[in-house]
Image 1 (cartoon, rainbow, N blue to C red):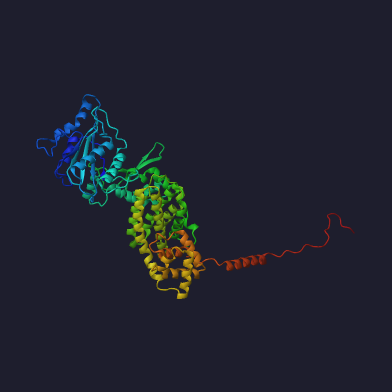
Image 2 (image 1 turned 90 degrees about the vertical axis):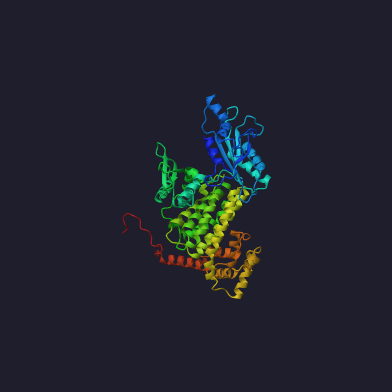
Length: 567
């Protein structure tokens, strides 16, 4: 059940005309009162042919008129409007049940607390099976205004209890970190203009896509402007940036002026202070590639950064920072990934936006490695090879699992659900990314004796999950990967032990495939040969000694003193 409190209005008669009218977009059938502050003697234009909308409006506005004229304290924002809607799968409620719902909501909001005989006047109008509209005038019978601060939270709590009491679909309790739902006017405008998203949704998507490209807020705003987005800045007398607003091209008011939305209204985590904390936590490197060797790419570095994620989740502020940066990495990967993976990765990025923010304050500097990896990926000119991409997406799957578990442990219901939705999209992307890698490796494989030896290594390294690994259809390919790694100087049992310790395999749908991408990543470079390295060092030392200039031994002749020689 959703109760959406609308912005305060000033025209009681106008709102009644809509509630009792035919409807602008939805059919209004049999509009009538189901509840009100005093049902006896209340005019109902829907059921009484002699009652008019004007009579009902005057009836509701009487305390407002008295305050404005007799008390000399005029108000203009006195119309409180709250539609209440059940879920599509819920059963239809009777008028009596809707009346109880309305009374509980106005009590929770502070419009008409239980037992308060001087409360505000209100009514509930039903003109469809699945919803009602509550209208109240926010001047009490004693001329005072009701205390409505925090009413949205209280009404939400009341709805959660109503859902339990009536056996309706139970929604998750809000925590104040979600984005506002689009209002009907925004949705209708988008439909009229042929847009698939409302302006705020469209702007949120583009701002999030731009974040990995910027090292500070000023760069971000410049990037957005270059992308065609209208940007407005608010600066102080010193010239410091105090706020920003963004507008969608073509989103104009009736007077033809551009409509802007403040960053914090687009999404809570897109306000200037939040963006500044995230973006300026990383000092951009002048030459990012200088720290890489020739075999390491941004894709490998991103996987390495995710490998350390589980160690950074112990402290809540660090965990929240890593989860936020994970969203940036998913977005960066979606922008640079091959076309066939972009749909799932973009869907994962969109879903994870809700998981990125909670009421836990993030220590953004804790996620420097992840955020740097995201920026390196969007700035690289070359795409990933198949195994590097498969390893990265597989690592993001595990990171999404960790994020979901952390949110669940902290009671973040909306964020945990968003992380689980993200996980579904990432798993689909991981399947696609790994398919060509596995197909290529399946063309060759070790002999039976080698495979039996490797199976023994699997049982020794991961005894709990060994049966599932060996029963996985991808096990022969894993054996091939282990054989290749051994040829490069690595020890298969050690690789398996390290991979199993890096990620528990109980949650893996295909544990052998998870190990394939993991071991390919860790064994991509040949292992150093310790014997050969020791021999090389001895050779270098011997050459250094040989190359030194010879030093003559000290002379045994007596040292002649200065002065006259003896004759």
